[in-house]
Image (tube, rainbow, N blue to C red; front, top):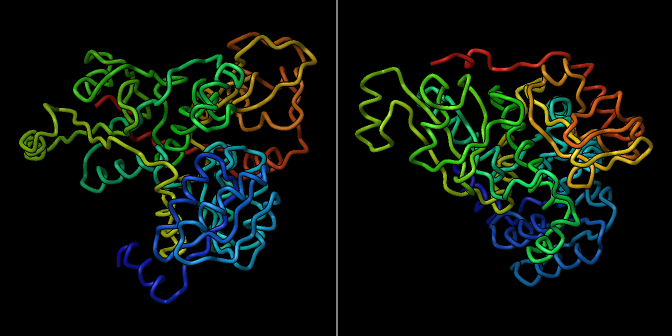
Length: 426
């Protein structure tokens, strides 16, 4: 039975999936609005640090939903998670420390969790997925976000027996590595979104984090620190993301990448060594070969999240999750000169941006996952623009929940599991 048919059955039985949403910003609000029209699903809890935002989402939902539900509306995420009228939690905050606390409370309260918080997933996803699995619960990223949308194509290709050479996304925003909330304030206001969130898109952190999550779910790794980020379209991307000896930019296949020019879509580049299959791909006009692009020209972000909610509750399944130990890391790089003694703020702020590298490189270089730049972080010495942060540069806040969980993750997952079988020059 399909998810849609299962939802119709829940609707018929007057037993809708009861959803609690933490974060009623742009993405959370859109998802709450969407659920008002989905059979067999309802919103029964909304939390936001801005109570007016939570009430706005509640009022809109109630104006559209055919059935009015008893709803917890609060600034305290624990009240939503602990509600007996909520069975699955959506974290739509995008903040690692907040996400760490939400995940722990969901685990304690025995609720499935759906993440629209890539930032926390790339920081402590390995251990939280293990915890939730051991508890018989679902821990999952969201359908519609680029990592899960790309994973769908990746698994589609692998299920057909094709080799996946590259998997990635188009970048939606111009790359402004020094962007901060002041620089993008006017645009953020126009788009009705948080300036910190838009800054994280513009400075590249979001793209790095999204491909980090995809890497952890597939074993594919970045070909180089920060990836290549070539400009390409559907006709040229397979040629540009080819090996250097074939006129491309890659040293290896089996990698994650982002491309300027394919937004808002996601893609995989595939091949087959079987002549009849290669002939069929050409006949079906997938491309000129020998490498072919499978492309999805959209991702619907939080509007697809209800699909993951339904998968978690009805099928006890996820949309995307870590394979095990982290494969890649998004590490902190200074986006301004920082003086000793200054406070260093985190994702989407004024101090650092994220850059993707392998977990092995992070360890050998002593770099810091950007999700750990949380709480009270103080520079121990001067840090230059563009410098990768290490523990010699900053004092981390060991009182934060995200730091404690990351320390435990590092202890339980001491080695990464990259998909080395794909790191060959095909």
